Image 1 (cartoon, rainbow, N blue to C red):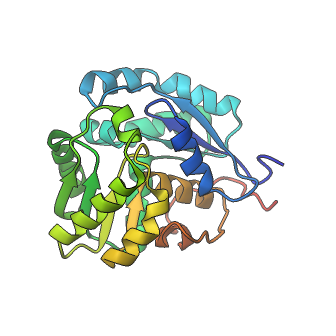
Image 2: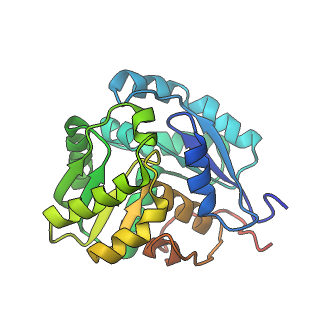
Length: 252
């Protein structure tokens, strides 16, 4: 039955298109559906980020109504603009009373589990947004050996990328920025979960993406330790011991 093993809530920064729904669900085992709501970001700009934050309480309430067991709050550019995800995560957790993480936090937890300190970053973002992301990652103690962006500012343009674009982006970022221990590829709008294994194979480094890290963190926070093949090394890793977990892990 749907939800027999638990439900992962995803507060999407923008409208959850079929692409996002399909990519996220592809990473989840049977019995674990995702529950969605949106903060309705249209453009990657400060005014949209401010409006999104004002809708957070309402979105967290939707998660309560959906009876989710763990929540991911999406929106890496929002976190980079704010300089921290702590307030967003704490507010959502306070309302919903379940383990909560931001998409950025899930990615960094994945990097922690992989033991990666030197990162190459590949994004769909503009140079301005990339520099904010660099500052955020370096503030978290990571060394960014290089970045490559596609210069996109409109969410729908990111979602409309062809499948090969994200593979090419990742491989080019690694080729032109050697020395990284892992690749950081944010933005759930990028159609790429089926490229992760290929990028890892062809670059020789593990890849952590937004959608992949959200699914991984949500499952592990609910006590579901399935090793899921085909979507990168991270999906076969456990959650670090210090990460929050659901009060009662589902065993169905």
